Structures are given as C-alpha cells and as structure tokens.
Image 1 (cartoon, rainbow over the protein chains, first blue to last red):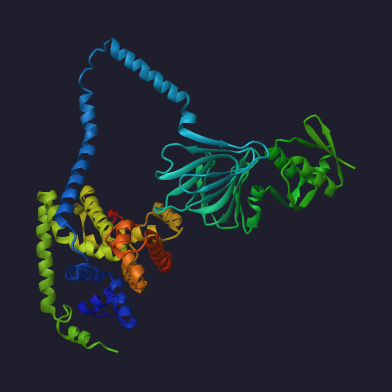
Image 2: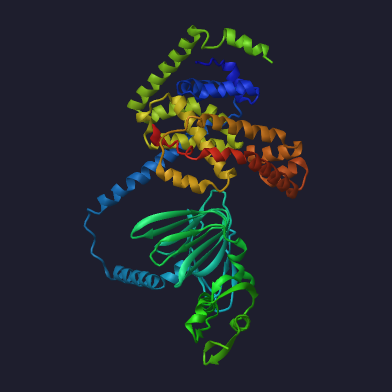
Length: 334
Length: 223
C-alpha cells in the first residue's frame, strides 16, 4: 500500500503540530526507503522557507576554505621533510657539537627520570588510606599499601588513564564529551568506564573489580587474545591465575570498599584470606600453627584501624591464642 | 478532526497527486545535481563553494532545531562540509546532494545531542561501532525527527524567564554576565535558570537514546 502524504502535512509534522494520527502516517511514509529522497527535498524546502536564523554564510565559507587549506598543508608537509633530507648535511662546527651534546644529555636525563616526569604517584603506607581528587573531578579512595600513578601530561586528553597497584575505589565523574576513564593494573588487564563507582583490587594475590553503580568494561588478554567483559552494578569480576575473568553476580555493593571506613566485612571468609589481607593492608605477617585453622571461616563486620585489634577480635571469635615472635604473630589453638 | 487546509492541500498542490508538478520539481533537482556533479569533476573546490552557498543556511537552520545554538549549528554543518570535501565523499555519492547532506547533518546533530544529553550508554555504542554496521537503521530518520520536535517542545514548555535566559545563553551564545545585565538579574540566577533548563532537557530526552545503538554510525563510509 502506498501512503500519500502532502507536503503540507509533512511541514505540520516538522513543526510539531501534527496530530497523533497524522504523525503516524508521516512516519510510516518516511520509513519507506523510496521516500527518503523526497523527504529530504521537502525538508530542504521547509528549512529554506522557514530559516531559524541567518548565519553569516560568506564568513563561514571563508573559514571552511581556510581550514581546508591548512589541512592540505599539514598533509603535504611530510613530503617536504623527505625532500629536504636529500640535501647533504653541512659539517658541524664546535659550537654545534656542544649544543648536540647538551641536548643528548638533557634527553638522557629525561629518559632516566621519565617515571617521575611523566607520572604523579600517590602511595599509601601500611594501615593508611587516602582520598585523591583528580583534575577531572573524579575521586579515588586509595587503600593501604597501594600505589596510583596519574600521567602529568595529557590526562585530560582523549582517554583518562591511571595505573593502579593495590586496591582503590574510583568515583569517576562523567565528562560532557564522554571521555573514557581507564584503570590499568597490568599490560593485560584494564577497566574502562565513563562515569561510575567501582573498586579495583590488584595485588600479587589476584585481581578483582567490583562495580557499585554505572557500567564498566574490562579488557583483558588471555593466551594473547583480547577479551572483553561488561559488568553491571553488583557484579564482581575476578581474574583467576590462568588469566580468565569470572563474573560473580549480585554481590552486596556495600561491602566492596568498606575499607574506606576502616571496616572489614567477612562473609564466610576463610582465615587464610583474612591473614593475607592483613599482611597486604597492615604489613603484618601472621602465621598459623595448624593448617586446619586456615580453613575455618568467619562472618562478621569489624571496625578497626590496626592489625592487632582485628586479630584480637578474630582470635576471640575462633577461641585462639595470639603469640608474638619478633615481627611475626602466631595464632594457635587454645 | 480533519484540517480544512490540509484536505485542500492534498487535492491541489501535492506533487504526488498532481504528477505534472512532481516532474517539474524532480527535473529541476536533477538539472542542478548534474551541474554540480560536473563541477565537482572539473573543479572540486568550486563545486564545494556552490554546494555550500546553496545548502549552508538551510542546513544550519535545521541543525539549530536540534542543538539550539547558532554557534554549534554552524560548527556542525561546517564540519560536515569539511569532511565531505576532505574525504572526497563527493566522488562516490549515490543519493542526491540534498539527501546526503541532510542525512549527515542530522546524524551529526543526533550524535552531538546524545553526547551532551545522553547518559552512560555510549560505552555500548563504542562496542557497536567497532562491529561497524554500515546500515542506517530504517527508522533513523524518525528518531531524528522525534528528537528535534521533542527538544522544541521541552524548550517551549519552560517557564518564560527560564526560557529567555536559556535562549540568550545557548541560542545567542551570550555570556552569563551579559544576560544578567540585560535582564537585570544576578549572574547566579542566570546560572540557576540554565541548569534548570538543561535538567529538563536531559530528563525529557532520556528515552531518546535507548533505541539508538548503531544509529550513530551513519558514517561517511556509507556512501
């Protein structure tokens, strides 16, 4: 069936004055591919008849031509460079050598100190957490014994990229132009976001991403293959030792970064994991007298600022004894 | 309810109903198109100039319905011409110039608006882009239409003072201070009005982006 639409109806539709019935008719008409040419021609006529404003056409044309000229110049310049390379270089005099040498020295120094020059590094000691505000308005809460590197130059360019070792919670602010925010934990693992809250855990024991709100994408490579995982709020992605990412759905978002409030939430967590956590966050080595203890689990919510307090509570819950030997703490069965 | 004007129009002046007129319009269009095409073959920059003089104002007029800023509309349209010339898109254009340019401008406007007023879903579209669907969705044109009609409605519904401030700031590209002086209000109030208007737009346009995956990629490569 061929619908007939008058130019007038289309104009009314474009002006937002069509009633729902007409609107439907016009839309049915536009959707047909064979009408698209006519639709655009009428659109052109509509805009020519009812111009919204009178732009300075000549000025705009001038700017456009100028821009095209500049574009041409930049495209050609590489050729120019290669042609000048054909001219034999003049022999260098003493002064030029001096300049060349000092330039080399400068470059060398730059190379040596490239890390501190390129990146601003935030580092937290054992048992300390800190909040960092980035220039784009994003906030990072850095957990104990963690390191965050932020590029000094070009952070606000195309992609906002930071490097993390340790654990941190990111509240990324969304930019007008939807710039990506990327957290890299290794060459093989990175998290990409636009604006959202999530925490990243990247320590020798493993890598873990927990999403509180928004949406993020994880890029990782497994066996030299690039893979991607999309996460939804409440998801926790865990990178296993083989290099595979596993997604756990519907986790309690409140527990993702409870360390910010110096709170530790355990949910049937094995003692083994807890003592690794204590070592990571407080630098306190804990040994167990009996490997059976490692498998016992604890559930609960502890607020503490130091390892001793946490260990004391745990040992009371599990009915164990704490013994200190030099720098190491032993947990033994009563 | 049938509009009397409308029935009138269908009877007499619709190009579809009166075939003679339709032929005339098309013939005109084809004439100028062949002329433009010939010019592009011989002297591309002359062709660009002709095309620009003919389409710049109507295209800006259309773009401004989406973005509600003279400056932005002009920039977007200029960018379309720039890319059109730089990528030599005029060499393998299959539709009419009118159709091509309007589609590009509408697509640019849509993309721009989504970037400014859309939410987080851009993440998915970047994925979508890499899959690269060169097909324009059939209902893309309708989404474009709905978008600018909606924008217009939202702005029309704003409280008078808020609307005035918003138009001065966005459409006329005036500074907060100038507006404050002109309307005898404090710059702070100007700011409040503008953020209110933007909030309205954002929430009203919220639904427009959901259907839009893949729509963005009406790239120049399509032609």
